[in-house]
Image (cartoon, rainbow, N blue to C red):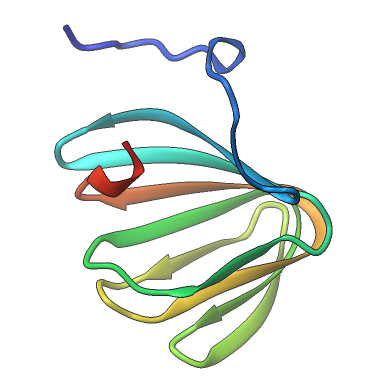
Length: 109
């Protein structure tokens, strides 16, 4: 059965480390949305994957690295990561990122 409505309060945070946690909000085979909570100093380490990723900065300030290029992004900004490019983030001020992936990240389930 497809779940059409997703209520944030009904999803538990998955603790990734002492500074980073995430919620898998919704997904189907071609698309996934994930909320990631960062405390100041939290790191999304450099990595790559075959999925296309678009991330919205809901709150906070992040240094984002994509393919060796770095930029500071704040609430309201976004970034696009094409398939297989090396990317990562460092949280400069506590905040939340909203990641979307196409196709879905099976490795997150």
